[in-house]
Image (cartoon, rainbow, N blue to C red; front, side, top):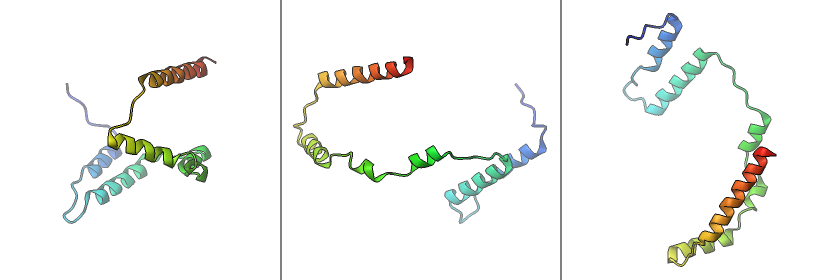
Length: 108
């Protein structure tokens, strides 16, 4: 199967720019960032980030207090010692509970 060349001359030049090999002395990150900058300029697509997405990006101070560091250290030590016991019944119960909750959210 033969694929015809693009009829838009600007698309062929943007492909040619992005396939150039890096010059000696340049690292891959510099080449990748310049290629990405050229691609975004030639695409002409505006991108906006919602305030919700920006809020999710920033870690909140209250999230750190949600972690019980003493419990984490205890479990970590038990795993390293080989004394940590997995309770398959508790895992199964929690999996079923989570699945039921997800089903209730999608149907309700």
